[in-house]
Length: 608
Image 1 (cartoon, rainbow, N blue to C red):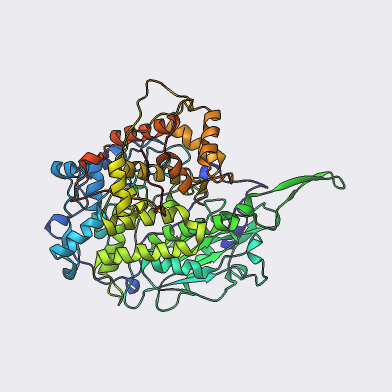
Image 2: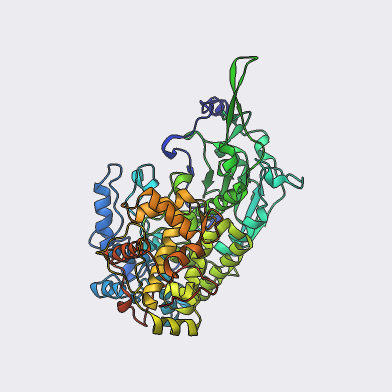
C-alpha cells in the first residue's frame, strides 16, 4: 500500500519544472546522529568557557536574535564582521577588529576543544593562519534575492562552537572509507560520453573526494537496485523517462554499505523524486550513512526539447536530443563536483553555511549554485569544522599537523582540477590564489601574477600615472588618471579576478558577450550596450569570440595607455573596496598580508 500511494502521487506534467527552485536542490536530509555502533571516537569535552552555544550577549548571539525576529521572506541580513570572527572561533574584540581592518591576523580561541597533541601554542598559531577571513579570498554573503535559498531559509546558523557541542559524526578506525555505487550502467561504446544519459567515469569523483575530505574512496561495481523490487517509480513527463523514489533507494543502499564504510553514495543518471518534491538532485540519510545523487538534471542536454506537428494525428510532438552538445559534459562534471562535495559535507555534520560565500552555502537550484558555490572552497568556519572533525577521529590517517594537512589538501585539489582542464577553471583560480597566500604570504595578485623579482623592481621604478587616451569610450574630462603602484596593481587584479569568477556562469574560464556585458553593467550602469560591446572587442585580444581570464586582466591592468572606460572600472572597484572596509595598500603590514587569485604566466610589465 505504501508503494502504491507513492507511485500514485501526481507527476509533473509534460515540460513542467519546479517553480522557484522547489525540489531543485531538495536534499531530503535526515541530520540525526548515527546509531551508537557508528559513532565516532570520543571528542574533547568543552572547557569552562564552552558551556553552550553563543549567548545573546555576544555579537553572534545578537545577530541571531535579529534574524529570528525577521521571519518574513527576504529579511535575512548577512552577519557583521564580529559575528563572523566569533563563528570561526577567533578573537572579535575591538582590538581584533582594528587588526583585521589593517590586514593583520587575530588570535585563535577555543583551543580546549582540540586533542592535547594539537593544543600547543605553535600548532594553534599555525592553525590561526589558515582561518583568517581575508578579503577577497573569502567573500561575504550578500543580502538575499528572490528565488535564492537564503531568501526563505529559516535554518539556524552553525558556528564552530555549535558544531563541536553537537558532537557530529565522523570517521573512525573501523569506519573510514567512502563508497561510490554506480546505479546506471556504463556505456562501453567509444563515443558514449556524447550520449545524453551516460554516467561519467566515477573514478574522477573518487579522486576528488579523497582530495577534499582526506578519506579513501572506492568505486563499487554497477548495481541495478533502482530497477528492482521495492522502488516506486512514475513518469516524469520527459518523453518516456521514469522517476524513481529517492527514499526507497536509500533503504536499499543502506544494506549495501560495506563493513568499513563511513558512508555509501549511489550515483545515477535516472531522475529522482520524493513525497515532497516533483524532483530532487539528491537525498541523504546521515543516520543510515547512505545518500543517492541524480546527475540527470545536471546535464544541460536534458533540458533541450524541440517540438513539431504530427499531421497524421494532429498533435504536437516533443523531441528530446540523444546527444550532448560541446561543453555539456564539462558542465555536468562541474555541477557533479559541486553537489558531491556539498552533500557529503552533511555526513560530517556540517550544516548550510551562512557566514561567507562557501561550498556549504545553501542553494535553491542550479541557477544559484552555478553562480557562486562551485567556484570556491570551504570558508574559514567550515574549514575549521572539517579539520577539527578529522583531527579528533581515531582513524590511522587522522591529521597531526592541521596547517600541513590544509596545504596538502589544497595541492591535491589543484592537481585534480588541472587534470580536468577547463571543467573546474574558476575553482582552480581560487585554489591557486589560496596557495599563493599561504605559501608566499604576499599580496594576492602579486602572487597570482607570479612576477619575478626583476619585473617587480622595474614596475616600482617605472610606476607612473596612466594617461587617458583621447577619443576613448564615454570620456569625461573631469576624471583624473589613476596611478597604480605594485600594491595597487595587486589589489586591482584580485578584485577583477573575483569579479570575473562571479560572471563566468559556466565556469570555463571564458566570458561570452552576454556575460561580459552583464559584468560591465554591474560595475557601472552608465555604460551603454554599445560601449560594452566595444570594450568586449578591445578585451578579446585573440579575437576568438570570448574573453579569457588572462585577456581580461591584460586588458585592464597591462595596457600601456588605457582608455577612460578602463580607468572608470578600476576607480569604481577601488571605491567599493574602501566602502567594504578592505585595507588599502598603505595599511598592509608584514605581519599579515592579504592575497588571492590565479597566476599569470610571464605577464607583460606595465610600462610608463
